[in-house]
Amino acid sequence: MFTSIASVSISGRLDAKLRAIVAAGFDGVELVENDLLTYDGTARDVGRMIRELGLTCTAFQRVNDFEGMEGAARAHNFSLIERKLDAMEQVGTDLLIVGSNSSIATSGDRQRIVADFHELAERVHARGMRIGYEALAWGRYIFDHREAWAVVKEVSHPALGLVLGSFHSLVRNIPIESLPDIDPARIFLVHLADAPVIQMDFRSWSRHFRYLPGQGELDLEAYVAALRARGYNGIWSLEVFNDRYRASAAATTAVDGMRSLRYIEDQVARRLLLAKGSGRPPRVQCHGIEFIEFAANDNEVEPLGNMFEALGFTRTGQHRSKRVSRWSQQGINLLINNEPASFARAYADVHGASVCAIGVRVEDVRAAMERAQALQISSFSQPVGPGELQIPAARGVGESLLYFIRDGEEQHVWKNDFLAVSDPVAGGRGVGLTRIDYVTQTMEYEAMLSWLLYYLSLFAVSKTAQVEIDDPFGLVYSQAVESTDRAFRIVLNSSSTPQTLSSRFLHGFMGAGVQHLALQTDDIFKTARLLKERGARTLPIPANYYEDLQARFDLDSALIERLAANDILYERDGRGEYFQLFTRAFAKRFFFEIVQRRSYQSYGASNAAIRIAAQSRYRSDSQN
Image (cartoon, rainbow, N blue to C red; front, side):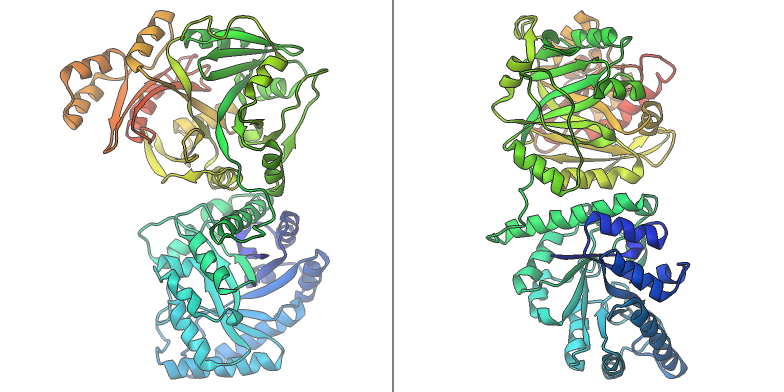
């Protein structure tokens, strides 16, 4: 795959953009004219800089409102294009992209359009250049790649070809099945962009909501697969822009862009059953979360341990050489790391007691690390004692860690590196918690798409639809990624409003991180009773909620009374029921959710506003 990205897709100065593009591993760059006009140097300087960095200038963007014009407007267009061709010659690129005309002054007369492109093709051909015609979704008469292809065929000139844009075709619902009708030799370049499916005019949609492949809801996989199957093997160029990317660092967007291309390439190779695949290890098969590691300073180890005890956990192990304790309850392992001069201690110094690492069970640890390296995800290692295991790790959200443990060998870690201080079943069944259901990570609004792509490209997961949650002080955006068997689930939250609970977490936590952990039980009423007996502090829910709940779901009065007596939230859909109980937050940083699922597979989004409002009432409390 020859990879390219339009310079408009990245924020900053042109020279910084180009350095970020080459560092991310792209083969080429599409130069957008405004980047050339605003650069403090000549077109030759820009061309020299591109070549010295080892990039190819794949195209020059773009000419708009060209075809079908009359009189002075037509003459002006040809004069303008000649100046653009001069600049292209100096830069060192031969492909000029022309977008379909959206002006009210254009004519839809096919013969006039064909004549205009024939004359233009003759002119550029004389200069050894080419024209790529792209149907824009908001084109006045031509907004369908089938119509653009018909024009290219009718002109029948070697200097005129087609530029395909996934955004323009897919938001217009142009059938993907029409792509094989196009001669791949006449496709000069393919623009790739994803997007959410929303109701908006096409131009605004394009300017504010173009995403990288995998981040939106368009069927990019089928689109790319159709072109690959037809034999297209040319330039794949990202053309994305939205308000989040404009606020992101050039290096971040460039790396994300390359991840998205590798992700879509892998997916298409798998879909088409290509013998060689992409040459990279496949996405990581994760079979669950083996442990959650908390970093804590000296003053917070004891209160954190007390919280774990109140939740039914028993201290079952102590690391052989480090100040790391293991707390267990059935299939759940929590660690408290207070080792001096360690990653965890440094993490606690910045964030306070908090989740610093997640250990996941995977099929192939080496392949997982190779996959992470191919995606430019940094690895992590630190000294271990004699005979202790070095568990491979990759950097994750907020500079936390993801440890990879081979599925089926997790007990070897506990027996090798930890000394038993009590029988793992000594505490009985605790309060009935059985497994980690999901982890919620909160991040800056501008970074949410980046972390969504991180999980999609690294792990064999799918994404759920994004939902909007009403916080008393604004909207919170939430989206989950989950493995097929749902043994591995991560929920991503962000907000663009500074006073929401999510934003306050970021401010108080000094960055992105784990805001809450959901733990499963098979009997939430029994668990609630045992939590009370242990003195666990749970979140009070207003009585008004339960009155409305009875009206909405027509629940039995006895059930409503049990729910209200235990501050349990309830939701159901066409498949099942969901019960939720929340703890008060530890030092306003993180909290736990206790869940019981009865064939329900979502995340209780309708109750999130109730939970957030309840938490907001305790903002002044030092323990929330």
